[in-house]
Image 1 (cartoon, rainbow, N blue to C red):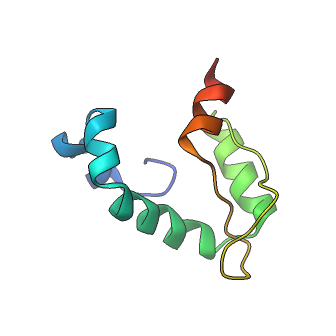
Image 2: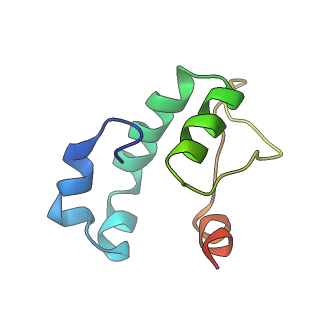
Length: 80
């Protein structure tokens, strides 16, 4: 969450584990969506890369914008 300037979410005890993040997925998705909507795909990837966050382009976009999506499965697969 540091990359998207949301230290409040990083510090939120309700989001400390996966179960909490699943319950609050709408809030997390909105925060990430707001951050990505203001950037190009190249900017998003560059900023995530600089922060050592695994990321890649998705085959689809939502709402006709450059907003990229990563499923939990894709994120986990990239970590292993």
